[in-house]
Amino acid sequence: MNQIASNGQLRMSLFRWILFVVPVVVLLGFLSGQIAGSTEDNRWFQALVKPDIMPPGWAFGAAWTVLYIMMGTALAMILHARGAPLRGVAVTLFVIQFILNLLWSPLFFGMHQVTAGFWLIIAIFISAFATTMAFGRVRKAAAWLMIPYLAWLCFAGILNRQIGELNPHAETLVVPAATSQI
Image (cartoon, rainbow, N blue to C red; front, side, top):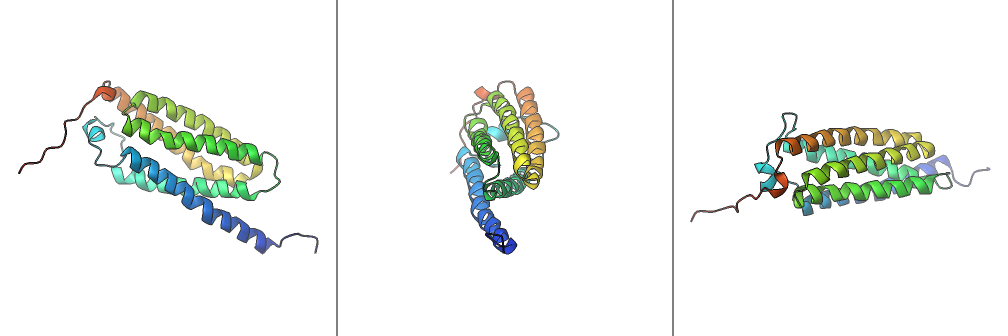
């Protein structure tokens, strides 16, 4: 036996990485959205004119959950690839793009910065593309898991841009406080 670990042991090691990394990525993504108020009851967002291609609110939660699971799985595959050239670069690029990703909801929903949100999506896409290329040099399957995220970023950029065009004064939009009648 010339192997340090059997194939079964290697699969279990990857599975352990996935069991740890995926929930952390999903939880951080969820917390970013919740802290920023990126839910359907965000009154500022409700007051904006939306583009015709805007999906229903529930679709965003579903899409981001699937994307975060795929991103977490891709990261776990890279973390599992000990000794692979470019592993450190790939992980660093992932962390950078993920931090940028987590900043988008507070910027857009929390601070109402539609234009800055668009430019942030551009930066996220560039860093996510670089991450995907680095992942491909370490594990091709990890790069393929990032492709839906890149596609979603393109769609999100289009939505963000159209919201900005339809609402030129979105940054200064003040929604009156909710009132209740007694």
